[in-house]
Image (cartoon, rainbow, N blue to C red; front, side):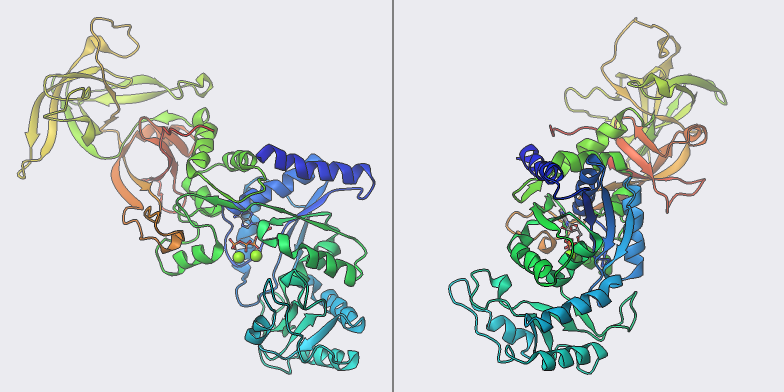
Length: 547
Ligand code: ATP
Ligand code: MG
Ligand code: MG
């Protein structure tokens, strides 16, 4: 379906170019600046920019800012940053609010042509008289006002003579149309709210169905891509372009909205998470926002590859979030240095290693990409290992450290557990081991084999670090269709205090690493300090997911 659908829009464009209907493809990405962009928007960005790019065309970033109540400068700037970070540059930066005057003139043209009227029914009355799929609507008592009266009323609406909701401008189309969107839709509403950009210049604002086609036409957009809910609005889109006598004729095409498992995908719901303090802002790594994914450590390349794979399906579906994770793993696999970090530390003392001595061992930075070279890591008498990598009474097939059993320390030596030290509470406080100097990694030792390899960091050289692990914000509850109604996951954020290789931070410029056996981690830009890095887990190492 994906390939067929993407071929479908490309075929249309090819034909439009061949037949001379257009000389250049112009697309637009038209966010409303009422929140931060999410991964669904990212898909739309890639689609619009890539399509134009493929045909040597242009793409506009347009703020569809026609609702003064919800929009803000902060959102507009954040959206620009996100689009740029994804790797795209727009040919024009546009604002719907720059076209208010032209839209107003076009609305007056409709009035003069007898195609629009000022209606004083309330919102509820308008809804109630629109009819149903089987019943035609009832014409408004204001439907047959004279052109002069309508022009006068409309000008007075603009000047702010009436309160919010007192009147609207409606198109005069067909109250019996089988398409309810054509039953005299609202074109303008009154709002005395201050617009973040137009300030108090306007007391009326155009509705989406009127504004969007005009915005597209004013900018010379040729292919206007939106989501499937707008399919039924297309006849109205075309009506507005025709009735307003727009000199260029854009066409609307609809594609499926991206939905993803385990998250919510709507600015309104995401804003609620921010406002209620359930997350630490729009860029919280648990958020499916572009800013959240960036902070978590996603790469633009991974998001673009994902968007291309998802493609432009013609039916709505829910994409498995593991597919997004697959792409970031693929993107980081060869580029991220592979180092060692201990997230839940347990002290190991190597009894036969000389006190005060440190030796430097060579470790390759990425076993699948030799170009990343090698580094020297310190080894000494005391090291940190993971609490999980030691068990006093292990189950069968436990090949890690356990009394009497040897294990390999990655890049170093075999060690054997000799003694367990307990704290007052009877918990394991330290493990005392011996090492065998013959078994040094890279020495070619073949005397005996061990089944397990664990990671570690040298205690005297390690740098303390925090690690943040993430889970979905909401718990799975298939009985509740709306994710945002599901119970909150109390474990959506876990912060652990452990250690990383200190020299890694000094010697390498990368801020994304693969921590051996733990997954990919990215240094948090806001929480990290030079002496105490904080790492966000981008993604764990393995997934059963196959693309
Ligand atoms: P939301 O409800 O999340 O705010 P929206 O459609 O109201 O979504 P806009 O800012 O109007 O948000 O969207 C800008 C563009 O992004 C539109 O062209 C819209 O079709 C597209 N878009 C928004 N959400 C998705 C999604 N989940 N999948 C694909 N495209 C999307
Ligand atoms: Mg919208
Ligand atoms: Mg919205």
